[in-house]
Image: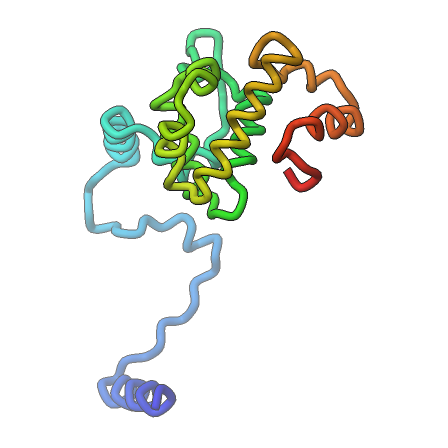
Length: 185
């Protein structure tokens, strides 16, 4: 059926005297403006609109991973860099769910409980509700609470930054003591 439609279009074009457009070399194509008869918007106007939208709405989360962090001396990054503990909790939240849902769960968790001390002190049901959108909330909440409790007992603070100085085997050994953290995590 498709072939027949295509054949009919070609026949009509031949009857009307139309000829197929000859392909233009890529180099020539790149020099041409897409709408030469339109005077705007200019490239600068497009950038201004983009900047206005970003200032109003922020960078969409799905595009954040493509943005290179370029800091200069006069700009300050409003978000602190991700900690090892952030990464481990993100990994726990990513189990048996999509990346989108695990990201939503982490954002929800951090918006309700800005520090790991808040998470540690929170009621388990409140933690479950915060991460419910990521699925398996009771299991993941229990794992996170256990991780924080054990970390506080073993190290006296809720911080895993010391892992950065260890070898991979040492890191695996350190993390394996936490219930719910295994080889896949």
